[in-house]
Amino acid sequence: VLSIGLDVGGTKTLAVALDDDREVVAQVRRATVRGPDGVLETLVAAATALADEIGEPLGALSAVGVGIPGVVDHRAGRVAHAVNLELREPLALGPALAHRLGLPVTVENDVNVAALGAAQLLGRADGDLALLSIGTGLGAGLVTGGRLRRGARGAAGEIGHVPVDPAGPLCACGQRGCLETLASGAALTAAWPVEGDVSSAAAVFAAAAHGDDLAARVRDVFAGHVAAGVRLLVLTCDVETVALGGGVSQVGPPLLDAVRAALRRQAGGSAFVTSLELPDRVALVPSDVPVGAIGAALAGMRR
Ligand SMILES: [Zn+2]
Image (cartoon, rainbow, N blue to C red; front, side, top):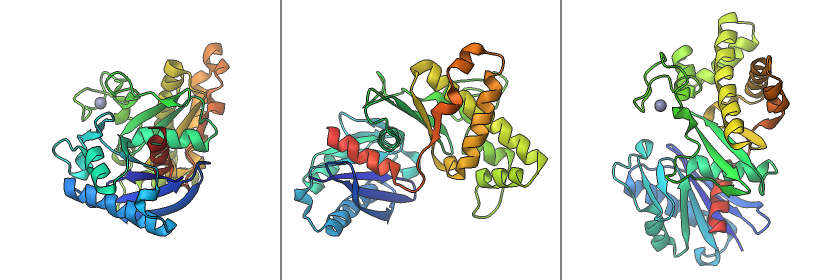
């Protein structure tokens, strides 16, 4: 029996089919069309293309999971505040997609499904893992005992909006000095503006590696704030692994090295923090696999 996972991003939607052993047996990618109708049609097209790829009718598949940015009511399958998908009103995506596909549909927040996918891929499928998603913003998905920890109101893991500097910059959320204003792709863009296709994250880490002292300082300050996020996650949830994901994690091993170095620096004077062995507990989300789509399929499977 195959399960489908659909990961909706602002520009592209990835779809995978997982077999009972949780192995990817097929995948397709589609450009995301924004707006309520566009998102629904994108998902129908991606699921249909995936079924064609497998050579089975849609009805032969068992379940569909969707990961989508925004505030998700997973019970109702409803998504709200998905600004970058141009969903201005709450959308009952789960029921609408279930009706179109004739299959049960589970809808989850995109960071949550990425956490499920990362737990599967990093050997924590039945254990404890936090995915720290470092994109334009900063947020975390929590898996404890192999299950998503959403929280009473779905805000578990919103550590990007923990204020860490009372004199810091104003955050989009209305508070001042949130961790997100210091440890995000947007923070790197503000500190190191670039033009063209390259990201600020890639540019800063490349310049630092080539001996640019200012870039090395920007990198190390940034890594220090990411490390603070890792420490916060371990001290609140004691997850075995904190996986670094999101767009900035595409920097790869140099990001992991910088964050590990920052964790060592920060633990310096504390036997307690040193005993937590934080540098050994931080990892990168695998870069060559569709982690979010795999997690979405797992979410659908668990329904
Ligand atoms: Zn904030």
